[in-house]
Length: 139
Image 1 (cartoon, rainbow, N blue to C red):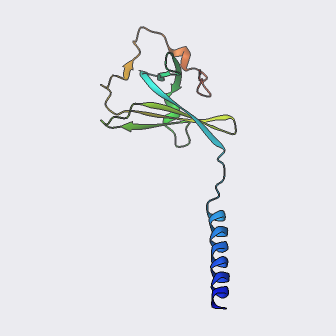
Image 2 (tube, rainbow, N blue to C red; image 1 turned 90 degrees about the horizontal axis):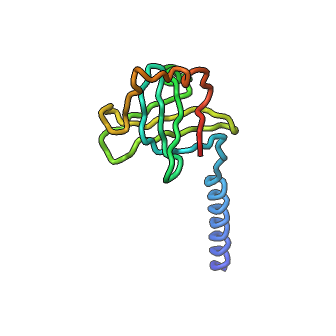
Image 3 (cartoon, one colour; image 1 turned 45 degrees about the vertical axis):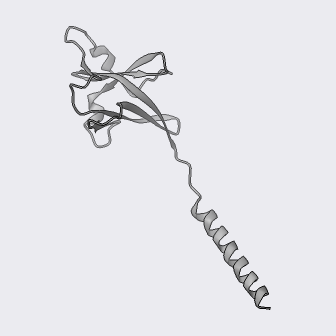
């Protein structure tokens, strides 16, 4: 009789543990998805950044991001400065429900790092920074 009671108690504890494990391990899918790109070079311009990123192992592409995106609290851009560690700069582009949401640049704080550059003043790049609503990506 004691064995039967003990088996019933253990079985009920086991079922309770399984029920708890199922409810606590569930997660909801996010509305966000992202693409992460390695930055080859990020050029500074008076109107924003020109980011040259690696789109696959052999080719690069470029995109233009205005400074305005980084200067407001609800802006479309965020800059995270990396120290002197091993991590290489990257650009993470976020989408929510299939629409562009925001971009995060993870760049070296030291502007003397090899990934930083400056667009020369004699190059007219102003037109590339006009009317930008989202990051244009190439894959």
